[in-house]
Image (cartoon, rainbow over all chains, first blue to last red; front, side):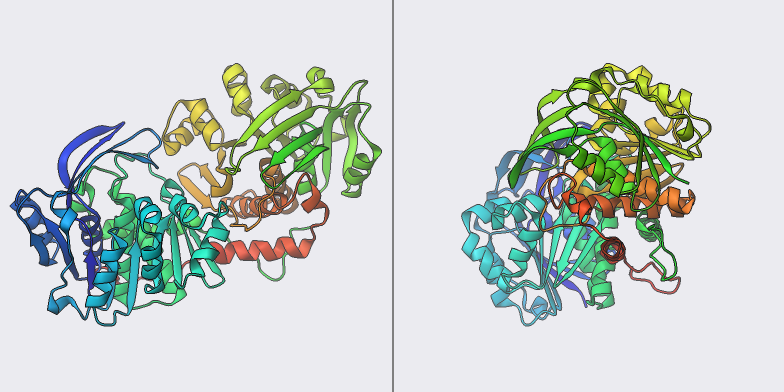
Length: 310
Length: 310
């Protein structure tokens, strides 16, 4: 099966109340690919500068991520600098140096164009459309975006949404995009734009999925130690798409399981800076936390016979 | 079985982006009792002024709520005035007129003292202790509080907590009470104070329950129309305790089901101002929404055989 992902590979400098790191590996496509690589093959399309160290290339290769689509241009790699307060749900961007990413034109290698699963990470929706024009018919297309594109290119974003199956967005962005304060109304408005499945990320509160008349709520895993939420959304998307690509099960039941695997992956990622936790993650931990999600959310349904009401 | 509840019966004036009401029926014990009355018998202890209309007394009686403990004093009934912005999670208090509630000394009628289930709604923790000294050995004692008591009487509140089985508190209060930003750490600290089960309310994000090493996450029901969140927490507690009292099942499985019934009741309550939605609620709606909660949260567990990881 395998997934094609187009997004950013970056350096991050991040400060949280629990520590800080400078120029560490980051970027939406990096988090996505690493997370998805636990489930399936990943083909990555992104651009880095000539300052991008071999060490990071080696790490991505060690995850079996195919890097033929990783362009290297003269100049510096995209650099994001941000800070989180005790409310880890909201990042404050201190600096964004696009560098080589500024003139990024995604060129999909021929051998990637028949990918069955495509993830359009958060980039300019016009570039997302260019990617769509280069691929054959993927079975599942998912995409992410951010507040900047919602306010600057809403029409382009709508065109993207009309062409994708699964749209992944955070709570505030869903409200911003639709002008609806009520999240259920915002979700209905976005489904009305032609997307089949909408996943709304709510940070430490988990995820809501809307699809037709069905709604699914998944909590975030309650963690005692959250060091750095950077990349949690892309790590979620990587686990989610990775599971779909691995199983091929895009039924509602399959999508729900995929959401839990995405949540599992995100819950690990926030336990350390950069991709450090994913680097030392093993399969048994993933399975074990999936089971913990089951016991975290399980309650008995009503049988026909009982009547707890008087 | 039956529940004894001690708290406030009040008039509320509430403004939300969707409308406003003046001097409508409110109060923690009112919401709690009405909600619990769908499941079991309720004995209410509170005080009202001589301005409290017969119409409200008749309504509470119509719910089979025993009002022998409802004292009537000369003066005005407690009046709360508040306002919500589009973020319905946070009320802004515009005025609090305690009136007859200021000198409230809960006196538990003799015939209520052997109650099996006791709910101490949000009142002065010193008064909560006085209630505890008047009752025999309830099977289950639960209590609520608020930020005002956490900052003004933390020691008295700790003494209450040492004597109750279930403590219900909201997210911000849990952080305030313990000084822990991380909610899991805050929960561990509160469990360490001697309470067996801690329920943390997170408004539109649902509820987390901590008990021993077990954690349970229940979402709030995603609603398209939320008119007024006033009383949601007490309505939750009423459904929760009502279910426990009805079934007598205080196992972990029973407590999880009780949390879902509490969430069901709260989800109805926010659909209209004051207790209007509860007044026109019927049993079939409660059962039906419970089933909807099951489908809202259900996903398949892992069987031994599959391996979605590569």
